Image (cartoon, rainbow, N blue to C red; front, side, top):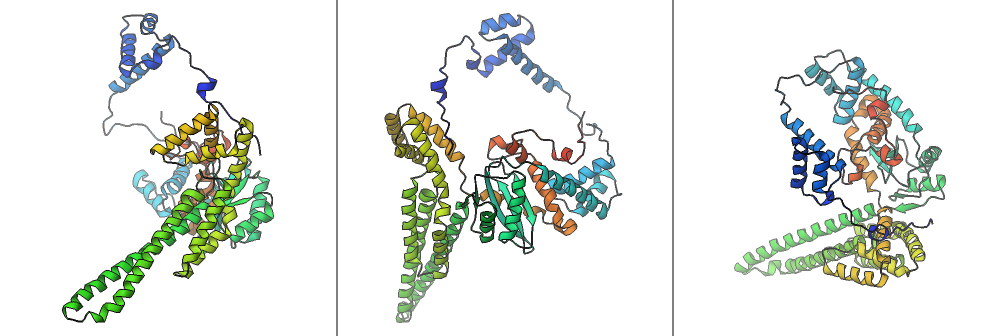
Length: 506
């Protein structure tokens, strides 16, 4: 393992010294006053800067902001029928417009024809022409896909989806969401996966590890093609399946309660007729069943919470403790599987078989935490204590009490460990949910298969890799495409990469 780079917090590395500039302390009203003074011309920029204890550069900046605001305020508002700009419509522009409608708006081929007719009074396009436009773009996209360097992918998430009962092999970079594989196949066996992974190796794909579900063909193919690259278990699917089982049990418990209420109502009516004996046995059995199912649902829900929050959580105890709790959960599930053997046993066996792969990410954390402990000369268990602190609720007083104790014991090293642990946790993926999200986006484009067959997958992969994020839960991704995030370099717009000239308004 490479040594973890530890950086001192800014307070330790960069002590703050007082400066003569007052700019950082100015309120918005004071900044506005400075801009008004500069625009009025009553005093020179030097005098204004000196009186407000700011630099001339800062004063000029406020003037520029105020000037721009005034220009916008007095700019005439265009009327509804005013011409905003003229658009030169050429055949080449129509081709890129067709691609944009299909890929951005998910428009059908006939929808494209209707839009061109309705808005541009253009009828010189047919289904065959649109087919040729998409096919030509698909060929260019496939060539560009094959030429891209995949060596910067650290963590990969392979998966399989189905369209018309045929498997589509997919793979996504966990950090950038870049799709490195999207191929329709007849099989999803070891050979098919192995061939694709070997081809991707020629493009530089050599991840530290992959995260995947329990697909046998996928795992066998990776083991054959990449024997030295581990395939970790996907905690997303494990938690998903456990959650489905808990909901099933809760629904059965609710049904048992409803049935019990009905029998109790019948018993009340029967007692009035002196016939309560007719429902006494059924009512006793219903009460017993309701208690049994309610207890089972509640207990399995608790076990599910423990698995999610204590065993498979990113911030948690060491590997040995997680193994012990995992085994305890398996034992408790096994004790209850006689009630719904066909469902509970299936989950228990699945979890039991995946234990080592599901917890493989903890081994990565252990190694990196050991590097921190060795570099800073602190006990390893203290690093784990700082890690566990990340998973606690910060609104609770116990979190801050524990944090204060660790700061007292570790001194200034606490801040270094805390920062390093946060970076390690953020850089250790444990789920393939990103590829599941990617697969859900593909379903909106399955209509293209009817028109051009599986060739559309190359174009779709290219488009989704080059399309820039308009919004994202991770602000650092906004305005960038997956390819730009992966490579760290600015890339042309996807239309420009396909050979088109984008229109720029004057």
